[in-house]
Length: 506
Image (cartoon, rainbow, N blue to C red; front, side, top):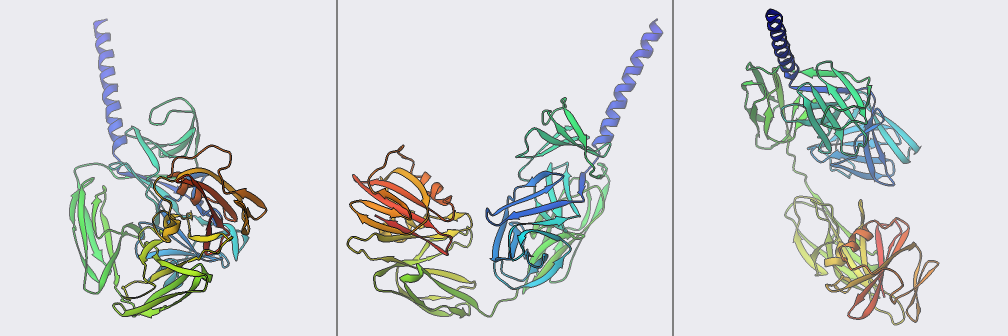
């Protein structure tokens, strides 16, 4: 009996050791990859929404992407981390190109056609939506950093900032996109299987129903003390540092140094771009790796474009537009038409894309041409006419909606929202001509409203103004009542979808 008990104890110890050894072997991976044979990037021009999806699940809602419509059939796409290139989609020809040496949002540059199918809904010359179809998309998870990358066409599409990751066991990983609800993906690196798990609790082993997905799972690396070779090279135009032997999981500082007349573009591993940072901290996998630094000639354009625009087009005229070499002295002039007065020059902020940034309040002045294209807007306001509405504020359109930055702190001064103003009511109406009927009555299209405070719940939070106006639907108007010093002011904004939206103050 004593011998039997000893045998049972030894068996339990053996089983525990076996489980520990098996768990350690399961943990010995560097990263895994999920391959998707059918993945789509879908873009809807009317709502300017972008989604990347596969297997009926959204992988990304376009975080970090910028899209610019160049023509009704031509679009530029880029992830904010891309450097030196972007994608151009021609929906008429149903083709995708990789563009280098061009300016995002403008025609030009060197174009390389990509093997990406384009599906179009509606007319190819003016689509209601279109999809880029990938057959080589994949998701990579790195265990050491618990980071995710989604890539296709040898290019990173998302860095997984909007994903959640949980290591349930060393061999069992839960991953999910932040907007997924009621389900997540479960990756077993031991069996190399991917499951769609429903009804369970993310991050823990829990009951629920799961479906095996037909997605190949590739597991890389064996964690050990062995050193692996990191070989760095360049395409020419610069030098690299950081080559050597390193243990798996170690962070290696690599550097790309451009020669005079060149600039760094990106690091690649094979055809995959891994970083656009010249000084990069690379995590060594458990295998030999070759990385290549890409440089290109820093060609200085002979001239840059100075584009002068009118806001509104009927407000006046400008002179000085053209192409100039960097540093050239340029005289520009804004002349108001009868019935209008000049209120100032504005520009679009190059880093944020936000329009209406004050530039100068002088109608005639000179400047040294910068080493970049520059667009300036000459702003005018209509002079007061007794019995007529004062055309006092103009608001520029923006890809995110109608922007009211310039009435909050820009031109014209008479149209600024002031401290102490009380927003009493906001209404959205059908777009139409704006006329004053006298007696405090104003007509907007087919709607007649009163300048005095209407019934409704007062709005005291002035920060809501920009939020409301930024979402005014195209083809609509917004009427906003503001109480200022005991006097009601009516602001009417129109968004007809033209280059400049107009605004009226009563």
